Image (cartoon, rainbow, N blue to C red; front, side, top):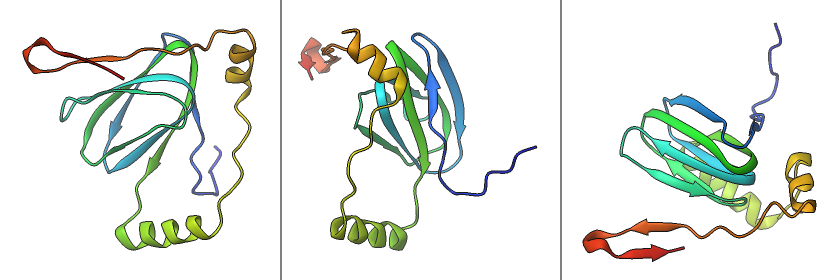
Length: 133
């Protein structure tokens, strides 16, 4: 049995069309590293599309279902720290900004093959209006 010795979560990878269900017990931040992820949360009824660099913060509890759409996807589920830890982290990030990391291999191969193209996302608003993102 391996015991992780760091607090850094490992990224989760999904192939196109593959789903993953996780029960969320505490506030989390979902951060997508590559690909397009469709996230559905049981409590609160949130349906969210996340692209690379986009985050989603969820403060409730419940079942979350992740699905990779249009190719492989890689993302992280990060626990949210308390108020004082968030403030200290924000000040530290402001003082020193890290260089962006290289994209994971699965996304680099898909991008080179031309599989990653812009995706138009719509949301149905009250009275039948459609909003494009």
